Length: 248
Image 1 (spheres, rainbow, N blue to C red):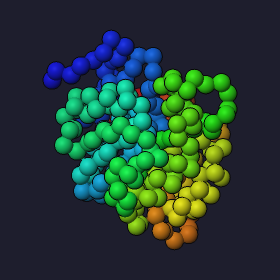
Image 2 (cartoon, rainbow, N blue to C red):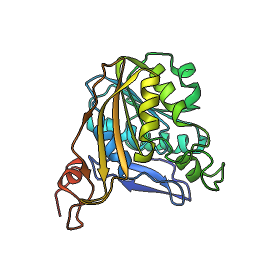
Image 3 (cartoon, rainbow, N blue to C red):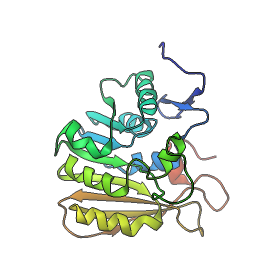
Image 4 (cartoon, rainbow, N blue to C red):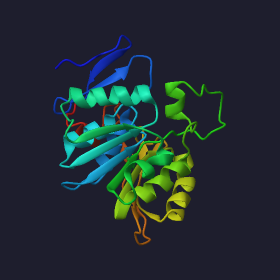
């Protein structure tokens, strides 16, 4: 397939069902957080899903490869990133099931309408605004810091986009957990499942997975921790299962 690859870009193999992703050589690249988040989301056949702040489009592409969702939309504010993500969709021949839209999360309801999606998934910027010196026009800074969109913007928009009973799944840093839980309940998304992600056993968690449902009943369940590496420094069995590869 004839897909444009720019000078500062490369194609990376996702090592899953032949899926590939186009990424900038010096730009923000997806990490394990996007992979485990796509696995954490519960997807039913024919679901309509939206990824808020899709970046490279990694999450919609993985969800399309792993599930029978009918349509996965990726919303991305940076035009060059959205254009690159759209080329990755075409590269994987997923045009009929994955759509990339360039736009602002804060205006998402205007684009799509309210109560349109069964699930909202998001891997938002982890760093709150005002922390450290950042370049507001730099792709990496926008992906990591709340420059163009804050945590409340994401959760508020998710609540409006979800159908009643619809699911929101997010990966974030543990230090923002209180903010996340308070905002989810404020916007009527009841937190239901919480899972801490640790680099390895005996190391503190550096990620947290959260799943909530619009209009759900109060009851938060803790899921057993997820370890990226085992005590020997190898990928854990669960990570290998998520990546659909054999243990080494």
